[in-house]
Image (cartoon, rainbow, N blue to C red; front, side):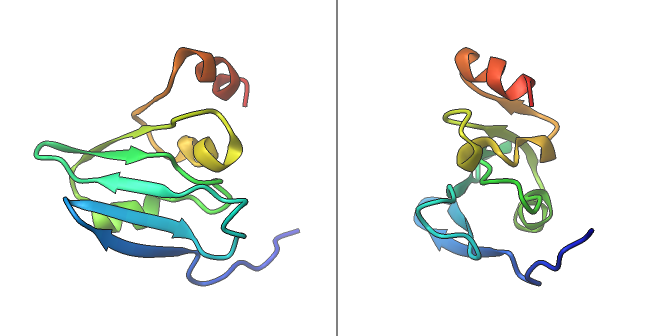
Length: 102
């Protein structure tokens, strides 16, 4: 059964130094991780990918036309839940074992 979701799932805030803060606005702030898009000269870094309940890829594709790599600081759901949405991704070797299993 499909359940309805909000039309706008992510909030976007520009920060200093070519950094964009992306937040899942319909999840309690203490239960959802932040997504940080760091714009580089040749490609962009996605630091953490949120819960992944709604794919973060479409909003990030709107904000960045460059090649992207997603990196999770840890394997917890609120940091790495959206890793599935990105082709190029990385993490610490300890987290890799957990992420590969899901």
